[in-house]
Length: 266
Image: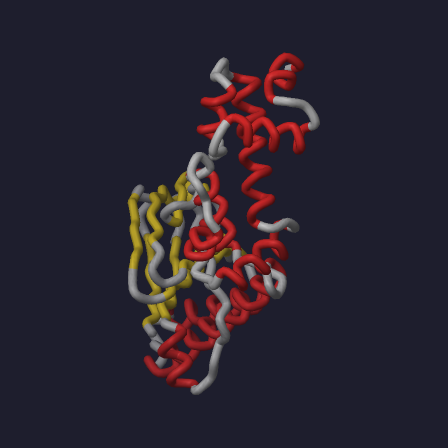
């Protein structure tokens, strides 16, 4: 584990990037004229008045961004930690909660601990002992683990796919609708057995994987029938149906009318 306190005394625009083998937790005492932060692969988030805001990025993920501070004494406090090492040192288990990044969030208890750590490290006249600063940093890391567990309980019900599994599976389905998508393929994307994936998928989306894929194929076909002049055979192939007859039969059973009649009605 490591703790760090940094002051920014000049209103100079700067860029930043962080990627490492540990989890990153930062407490911001910053006011910006402009700036943004991005967790690689996520939507960039703009920042202005970041006082009492925090950012958490799990191990293995990358943050980039830029900032143009206002003319004030800006500062931030950082704790980097590895839950695996913490489990070994404390002889506890944190469970299997999947860590998720959080940019510019607030939490009263965690914020109090991070402010205390910042004050300790900012006091150059009476510097705190390293062991004490690291103990406060460890408390902050434990509170972040607690916060992650609480968020996971609110977001994911038992037996459901996690947020990252949902995203991976949905992205795979959308990218491969024209192909023959098998249960093995989807289970592999979620890193689960076929049996557990089928149950988790239905608990998450309210229908089995097969019906979900068929529904997405028909939704794409409806859009193509309405917006293109492609033949029924071409649309069938583009939506993953083995032939025009199968597509027509499935479309009629789902929508209520054959594809060509649907096209005439839109």
